[in-house]
Structures are given as structure tokens and as C-alpha cells.
Length: 157
Length: 162
Image 1 (tube, each protein chain N blue to C red):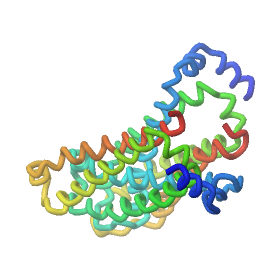
Image 2 (cartoon, rainbow over the protein chains, first blue to last red):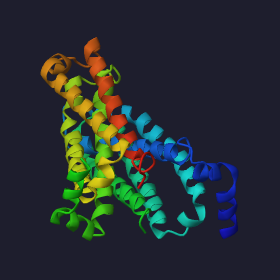
Image 3 (cartoon, each protein chain N blue to C red):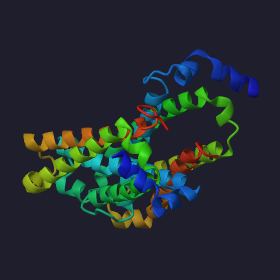
């Protein structure tokens, strides 16, 4: 396990990200990871808040239009997240809070995907409520916030 | 400016912030949650002003905006904790001033929107395109918030990194 992590960490691209000192290395990858977080969690939060009953003027039928934003944010953060992990693989793999973060992300994605499916099947707020969509919206909102907190705590624990 | 920062750093409030080891990480986590609300909600409104997502009436997207204000309020509060806790490391950092500049631009732009263009923009129905001036205000808003995010992230890498 450790051998593999050290090999990863010492391979060319992760080494450059970590050690180049270039603004295009670590700072840019981290900035893109933050931007991806904003788009992914922000767009999910819009769906969650609307399903929870806020901004009722916003048509439910338009919520699936946010899916491309959620997917783009997820793609950007998976790629930048893999790079950030590779650059410090042996340290991050030893942090329990890193696995907590991954667990929160996995569960948040389950809730968000499930919620988007219910949204596509429901013509109005009443149908959404009957399908139990609010529980998934609340779970999605809470789990994304927990993922952000666990990610932030990786710098401390 | 440095004298003011050092005076602030010596105040009991500033000392109290630094004396609570869990407060800084907690405030940072809140700052990132607030960031997501601002980017997600205000960003969506900006895009609609720019003419994206036309099948939604402008007023319907505006109805979400209180949540961008919640996010901004959270970030103003947590940002104040950082500034009061370690004022010297911010006022001497060029990236922080660039971030404040972007915040002022976003604020001024929002003021122009609310006072001059808001009513015209909110009348745009589903399927309707927005006037050119509204598109410009939407683009300036989006770029200035992205600038706030960029310079905030660069605080640790440009100037006196901490």
C-alpha cells in the first residue's frame, strides 16, 4: 500500500504539481477544486432548496436543467481531487478525515441523484412531497456541507 | 494601515479568536459553504441575466436570491473573524486587496442593477431575452464573484503567503 502511494507521489505530474512553485501547479489545481465545489454544491443546493419549498416561483420542470452544472462540477473536482491526492498521497491516505470526506461525497451523490430522479417524475410540489423528496433534499444539503467541512479539516487533522 | 492592524490584533476580541483553536477551522468550513451558495445561486441569476436558461422567468430565479444573501452573510461573518483574528496578515497581502476590490466591484454592480435595471430585468418572462445592459451587468457580476474566489484562494500563495 505504502509503496504504491510513494510511487504515485513521486511520479512526474504529482511531483510537478507539488514542487514546481509555478502558479499553474498547486495553486491553480486548488483554485479549480474550489470553483468546482462552488458549482457542484451550489447547483445541488438550488435543487435542494427548491424541493424544500423555497422560491416556489421557480418551475420544478426547470430544475433538471441544473444537472449539467452538477455533472461539470463533479468532473472538475474528481480530476483536480485525484491530482491533489496524488501530490500528497502518503499523507492523505493516512488521514481518517479524508475517508470521512469521501464517504460524505458518496452519500451526497446518492441523495442528489435520487432527488433529481424524483424531480423528473414529479409534476408539482404535492407530488414531490408524496414521493418523500424533501428527505432526500435535506440529506443532500447536509451531506454536501459535511463533505466541505471534512475537506477543510484535512488541513488540520 | 499596519498600525491599525496591529492595534486590532492587540484587542481582546482578536486575542479571543486566536485563543480558540477550533474556531478558525470551523469558520473556514462555513466560509466554503457560503461560497457554494453565492456561486450556485448568484451565479445562476447572473447566467439568466446573460441570457442562459431562458425557459425560466428572470423573476423566478430572483426568488432564490435570498439564499445568495444568506451565503454572503455567512462569508461576511466568518471573513470578519479571519480579519479580526489576524489583521496584519491580510492588510499586508496584495491578494487580499485584490479580493476586496472584486467585492467592491460586485457590490457597485449589484447597486446599479437594483437601482436602474432591476424592474426591466424582472419583467422578462419565460423564453424572453434580456436587454444588452442587463447582460453586461450579469457578466460583470459573474466575473467579479469569480475574482473574489480566485484572490481568496491565492491569499496563501501570492504575496506574504500564510
